[in-house]
Image (cartoon, rainbow, N blue to C red):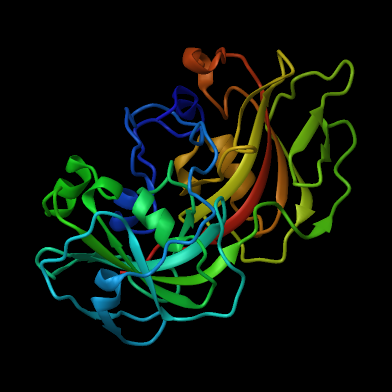
Length: 341
């Protein structure tokens, strides 16, 4: 994980994605300690998935899937499967927007071992079970990103993924399968998620840093002349979205930009990279306060004191001292409740 990520997440907590399966797949390639206070720093490069759509093949066509969309599938696999590149077959064609590199999709999926034909694990289906996943090979295993690319919302798709485009040895081990095994993913793309805030523009309180937006949503923060660090964290809603209200235990997908008041410099942002997904209550308190109670689609300005941020220890790897105030602009793109039971 990038070092700056240790800025906003609270001590001793680990990032939560909707299901354990999503942790293994959606955080593929993420390494490092999870024991420090964290900021949600994204991967360092934009999506590396080709815009070209992966075609179906005889192997993916051989996987027979029954069951209704957004409910548990039944897959018949003529194991053992062999494949050298990812193959992708549409089972049920949707009619919604089409995913492309960098898109965020709300997806439920089941993973199978293509060597044994057995079900390995599943996110589950229905409310609270989808995971917001970016079509980005730096954030998910490349075969899964290729499977989701070009898929319209409302689609059930089968991806047959060779080891070279699949799980690492450690990830396969977590799932109890062999790293050399082909994997099969049956994915239901429930919806696509916007990449920036969208809603009713609000007039923020006077005296706070101001925010202007580029056409694509990238913010620019201007700190007023003579602006002094506040004694308590200040939060203002800049855009009010029309989506669901964010709860502390929700998994959120966000765009954000962080600026240090002391330097007037951006120290971290998702813009130009990929949105970040994590549990709303796994950030330092000021960041969590800025999320909880807001609605999906909203944009929030948060001026976070050291007390609600890194505390007196600061974060040297991020260039943040124990007295630094952080200014964040946060776009809330999606929120999924924790699974019931």
